[in-house]
Image 1 (cartoon, rainbow, N blue to C red):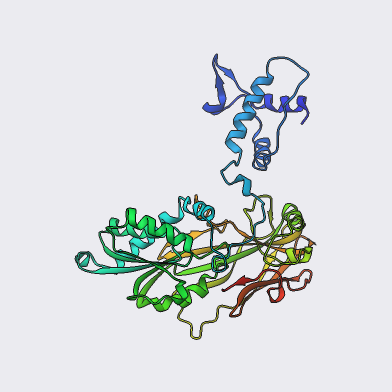
Image 2 (tube, rainbow, N blue to C red):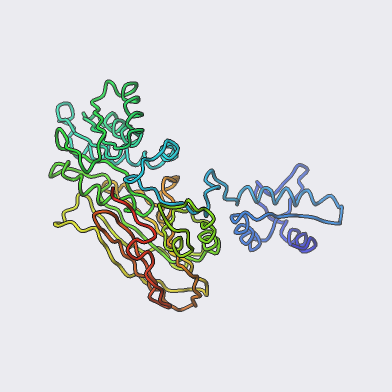
Length: 427
C-alpha cells in the first residue's frame, strides 16, 4: 500500500470516532480508515496477512497510524489455540480398528461445550424418565458405550446429582489402556457410586440388566465415519423397549468447495510414505481418500445440504446402513472445484443438539473437524452452472467406505470405488 494513499485515506475520516478509537490525551483525534477499507482489511486480517507501514516523511504521525492498525488487527484477527491445525490434512480416526492414545483422549476431554450439552441431555432424559414423586425409589440404568477415559461417565453422574435421580452406570470400553484409567478413577472418585466397568466391545456385550439410557459419542467428523450406526444398531439390544439413546439422530452434510491449499496439501501427502494403512503412495490413492481438516482457506461454492441420516434406536428390519444420494448446487461465481467439504449435526435428546455444520455450529465446540473429500483433478466451473454430486455409503461385514463422483457440469470417475483407497474397518 502506497504511504501517501494510506495516509490520505486515514485523514479523510478522522472527524467522527467511537470512544475507544476516537481520542488520545490532549483531545487529539486518532486516524481511522473508511468503512469500506476496514471491511476489506478485516478479510486480510482473518487470512493473517502481514501489514507494513513505512514512510520517508518523519512528521511524527506514523506512530499513530501504526497504533491504529495494531488495535484494528487485535479486533479483527482470527487467532485461536487450534491455529496450527488449519488446513492440515489428517487421516480420520478409526476407534474400532485402532485403540486411541492418551493424547487423543486428552484433546477431546478439553472440549468445553460437548460434555456440557451431553450432561444437559442426560438430565432432561432422567427428568422425563423418572417423575419427581418416584425419584427416591426408582433406579435408572445408564450405559456409557465407548467411554474412553470417562468424560461421559462424569456427565451422567453430574446429571444424576443435579436432578436428584438414582442411577446405576455401566461403563463399556474395549481399549485396555482406557480401562486402566477408568479403574483408577473409579477407585479414587467413584467408589461411593453405583458404577460398574466392563472391558468389552459394545457389540458383544451381554449386560446384567437392560438399560434405560444408552450414551455414546462415536460420531466422527461426518456423523457416521466412526461407525456409530453399526455400533449402536448392535448395541440397541442392550436397551429397554422404551429406552432412550443419546444421541438419537445424526445427519451428514456436504457442499462443493474451492481450495488451492487443500489441493496442494493432497499432493504433498505423497512425501509421507507411511501415511495410511498399507496404501501404495500414489497421487490418485491420496486424492481418493477422505481427510479430517480444520477448514480455513476455502471458498464455499454452495451452502451445505443434508446427505445421510441415521436414527437410534433403529426401527428398520432388516437394518441397512448403506446410503446413496444425489445433490445439486448452483454456481454463483466462476471458480475452480477442488473437492467436497463434509459436516454433521446430531440430536442428543429432544432439542439439545451438537453441530459442526457452519450454518449451525455449536459455539466453542472443537472435538470434530470437518471432512474433506478431494477430486483427483481440479475443474473449472462457471457462474450459472449446476454442480451435481453423487455420494454413496457402502457396507460389507469387513469394512465401510464412501464413494463420490461428479455428474455435472463435468463427469468424473467414481472416487474410492470399492474402498480401494480409504476403507473404514469394522474389526
